[in-house]
Image (tube, rainbow over all chains, first blue to last red):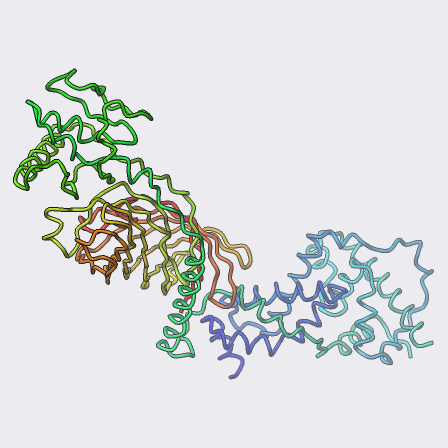
Amino acid sequence: MNEAKLIEACKNNDARAQRELYESFARKMMSVCLRYAGNREMAEDFLQEGFIKVFTSIQSYNYEGSFEGWMRRIFVNTALEALRKNDLLRNGVELDTLEPQQEADYSAVEHISADELMELIAQLPPGFRTVFNMFAVEGYSHREIAQALHITESTSRSQYTRAKRLLQKWIKELEQ
Amino acid sequence: MKIDDKQFEKAIQSKLAGHEADVRSDLWAAIESQLPRNTVAPKVPLYRRIIGYSAAAVAAGVVATVIWWQLPEKPLDSKVVSEVSMPVQTIVEPQANKRQQLLTEVVTPSSTTRTVPNRESKGNTTAAQEPTISTSSPTAPETRAEEETAPGFAQAPTATPNSMKSEDDYRRKLDEFEQAGRKLKEEGQPTILPSRKKSPGIQVGLMAANATTGKSQNSATAIRTKTPMLLSRRNPVYHFDHKMPISAGVTVAKTLPRNWELESGVVYTYLYSKYSSTNGNGSQELHYLGIPLNVIYRFARIKRLSFYASAGGQVDFYLAGRQKDEGYDEGISGSGYKELKHENVQFSVQANVGAALTLYKQTELYLEPYMAYYFENNSSIHNIWKDKPFNFGLTLGVRTGF
């Protein structure tokens, strides 16, 4: 069944189509959830909640943009809602605990695997991790991040910078 | 190699593009259980589903029946049975005002004193003129100890007294007694019946669909069977102890817009009662097939749990029934079965509130307190619906949708 037919069947609450859609995207969306959750248990909660939202709101999908992108936004929003609800976005790292800014050398990213990168991202404090995911991976602007997380743009920028510095540090440690 | 921020972001995106993570295998079941109901035709043919669910319903019914049979039986209340004595001794020595004598003494129980107001000749008897109940029996003559006893008062005697001089004389006295009873009824005199045993109020049944349960004990009343010749002269008085009804059925719910659902199906109900009479003890089994029609409104849904209210009616068709006497009166059927005839359908209305937990797909476990009212259908058969028409109860069941 191609994607359009699958979507139409899901709009009719066809259980088989829903299962097929889930099996097609579950692993990809789990990756998204893991990036935001930081641990598998919370990621599974995001995944479950996200798919329920996908199937209950699939009627609103009007084929503008890719379906995977539409789904991804739902999972990101689901994760953000949960993080906000649990007040996890406030958890960050004090500036003093970070080393002085160094010249960025991001070439190391090329030398680690995706799984290793995922593990490093998961170790970021929730606030940093969220901003990093939204900016570096999802491509949101700092203005959009600020609106979504109810923070200022400067806060978003500074948190992203710190996240990058932490990642750089950890990647170097990983290479050594 | 040094790259700028843009390149870093691209490196991150390309590294993570297409990344996938393992998913727990049982996660889909949890998701699926919370999805809206399927409106597409089922893959499994309908008749096979019906057979499957019917089998499940029957299995649930069997389990419930077995559990019910394992429960210790409640002994019949012998006090109620012997509360009211028959007017045998009172007509041995006819008084000047025989009818009044009958009225005042016929209803006088031997174990408890119960009198009916005497309008015509106050003071003729030692009994109080207003209905009274006491633990002693001041108005009962000594000979009462020899009387046969039976529940109910407006019934013909079942045994001829030793002191009766002839059968004709006995018949004549009996007619007088019956006429007096009818007059008493017409005049609206208060009658004293054995008190009903209060129902526990909450009953639990196990079923595959919705069904009602209940338990009650009726007052002493007569029933008709297929032995009219015998009963015309010796209509025995019965005291019933109704057991909890057992229902099993299959219901189908059609989802309507805005959280409304329409539910119908078939529900089999088994009613069982124990009775005691002057002819001895026995049991009664009744079988009904009902068609419910309920409107359900789900007013709240929290993940797999939903709350709803429903209201509707049910019509029950009588299938079969029989009584089995274990009596000692050789005039009746001994220990044999008597088939019961009954043509009237039983209408009822009920209202529920319930909570349902989605188990799998559209199958849900529900628990719903209900109140039901069973309309009088002028049936000759006594059952719990007739003797206790207004019921509260609790239904536990499994419901599925197609």
